[in-house]
Length: 277
Ligand SMILES: NC(=O)c1ccc[n+]([C@@H]2O[C@H](COP(=O)([O-])OP(=O)(O)OC[C@H]3O[C@@H](n4cnc5c(N)ncnc54)[C@H](O)[C@@H]3O)[C@@H](O)[C@H]2O)c1
Image 1 (cartoon, helix red, strand yellow):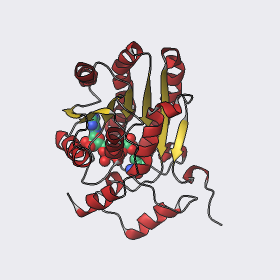
Image 2: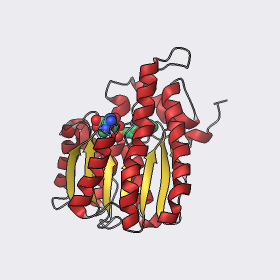
Image 3: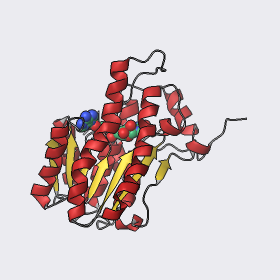
């Protein structure tokens, strides 16, 4: 375990061990692009510690295994399995749902966490192959996983789907392909919430702000930029993967049974902060 990871693990929020008891959960992008606590890894750990049976899916199996080993170190009897899967591939998405159904008889929670960024560009200079890849990975993937998970959820009278968007959808800053894809995730969430309410399926969206995770620091971040990101919020504190994971626990649990179609920024108020005067 690296020093960064050890520090981040030590800041884990308290759990009751029962908020997701026996719920069967798929987490996509359950690894992390580098050592440390990313959003998907944090959700995976917290889901397992709250009693869920978790299927950790990642295109990088080693990353998912690393998440599993953290879970097992914290809760040796956790119900956790890993699987290599590519959520842009329909066959793989079908296999993900088959795997959890074979293992635990169905699925109650689908946490659509996978998302990739893209270098800064506008519609004028964006590389269109990269543009398409971002839309495919960030939006189409959620369609494909949900397409197979929903019929399984229906068999057990409902479920909870959580789609991960980004503050870049609400406050665009030069990553136009990424912002476009994350805006589509918001629209997709609301459309799915309407389509599947009758089946007892809730669909909600987390909009992470500038949280400090391997996604943003793995290639190095100047302390001054880190400080600027922290101060971008109203609260003036730095968000992290646990903030996103804890929100996912709430939306996955029955505590949020009366909530669907919600677009929930977890950003210290960045989305309503005006320019400094
Ligand atoms: N960190 C931030 O500042 C921030 C801010 C806003 C939104 N987000 C969103 O949070 C989500 C992810 O956060 P994270 O911290 O877990 O990111 P991460 O990049 O650390 O981890 C994502 C994991 O997804 C896996 N992955 C990538 N493509 C895949 C595919 N096609 N199929 C299966 N697995 C795949 C990667 O191997 C990686 O392990 C994304 O949707 C991202 O857009 C992050």
